[in-house]
Length: 245
Image 1 (tube, helix red, strand yellow):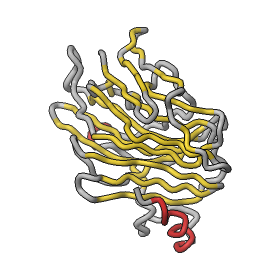
Image 2 (cartoon, rainbow, N blue to C red):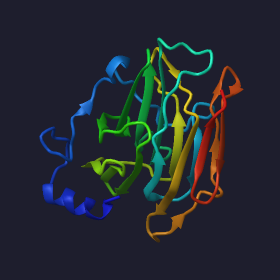
Image 3 (cartoon, rainbow, N blue to C red):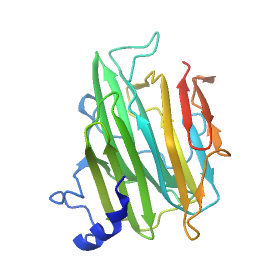
Image 4 (cartoon, one colour):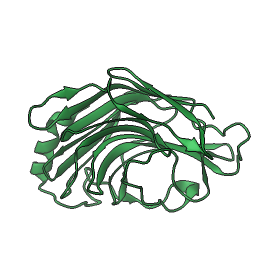
């Protein structure tokens, strides 16, 4: 990832709000192809709706991970005419109703797959970052220093990357998260994502620059109709979420 120049780039441009003409400020996404308008994401930790890992109690300023883009598939017995989707992301958040997220969403409907990378400071607009497809290897990460936010996704397969840098105001940073969740739009179902693996995960604390592993993270699972449909495991630097349907 190329975060070493993020702060200097933002200072150089001197921008405090998104400008569509600036390559570091892409226009917000207002729809997701056949799915329609994007819903507002929930900024609280959603037990039973999210699967993945959280570490907390520290002000974190830098988080990231590496992954291979999985396919979105219609679950066994699912409806192929619906948008079957999943979202996976990393970010920082807390208890003040804001959360910085960077990740991807994958969907399939009527045999047509689509993949999007995005970032958002929720609640707020969603911005597209870089093109991806199934099987691509990517890194993604986010930095927040004071009011400054910088995110980047590097597509290691294609050599392309997408960045977003801006100033954001109050952002809680006491949780570092690596999550998979349903795409919460009306008419969407949770896709079968087989196995999602966040590798090379890291979370760096503000102040002492301590780097935390996720060996002692709190793990979450997705439930549908009171039935657990994921299985999450972790090591020091890896979070694995399996779809068990």
